Length: 402
Image 1 (spheres, rainbow, N blue to C red):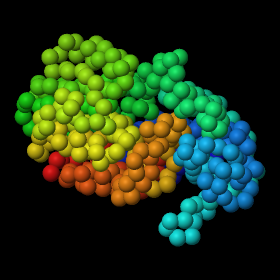
Image 2 (image 1 turned 90 degrees about the horizontal axis):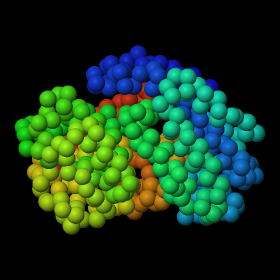
Image 3 (image 1 turned 60 degrees about the vertical axis):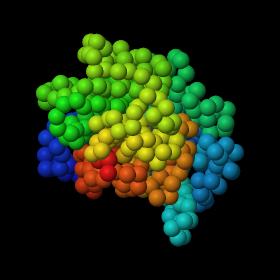
Image 4 (image 1 turned 180 degrees about the vertical axis):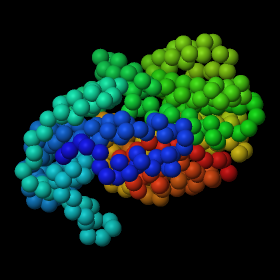
């Protein structure tokens, strides 16, 4: 389980000027690719530790489905199915367990140990990461918190939200949702670039940001517009967030950079409720912008329809997300966020939301088109990139209100 760059990674580095927008070429450099490989290795080793701590070796010596393993281990099904399935898929991607596809399209996969599980120390990839880019360290700290809480979570002894968001851990999240975090900032950069490319020409623009968190996405977008000379085109920027502590911190971060700019309008917005009842007039918005937010909408269709209602005719939505390149592919960020019920258990739709958590490019396209949007395009072009670099998870989807 080496952490070296693969031949595909090296090919991506050599060709990235051909397949990335110029502004993204310096972002996805060798340091970032090596960081992604180290982090994937790190969370795999954490997942292996959870696998061993919870006695799952005994239940995977013979092929079994995730549901069967959950039952045999005595875990709580409604919370354990998605996280355990991720653990098994992640370990399968590294050859520790074997994934056996089911007979027929509806049959679930089964898993079994590929051999005696190795003894791997998570500290090794973490030390390698610190040597090349210590800005990722907070992502490692949060993954360790999640891994430590997994056994109690799977047994139903602790809620995921308690594990991740206890008061003493809020400081970690303030560091995580930051443009100083090398793992997180890439989604803000992609989203800001996509938004700049899709914004209508001219002034009087109203931007609505959903799930603005601590303001890092807003800062990335506003600074990009400032650099391109378009900040003056923004008449109003509705910076919204549902969590009061995040909203207050985000408002302070924006004020520290832009002072008391008249266009900034902070406020609370719940994307799972009608926007009109929360002060967003129908047809009033030029751009709806969301970074790593809409994938946790309880009902994706409802939220996208509310976004469409808020937009003026021809308005744009930009959704910057951690993407699942291919169906069933495990994504390293899922180790943490699978602990959250809003992440793992939304309302499902077989057309475009067959699972909780992250979606594929095809699923995002299907969701947007089914809910009144056209001209769906990705920045960067994840459909091309995923063929060469399967650990590339950052993209922004832009679409126009039909």
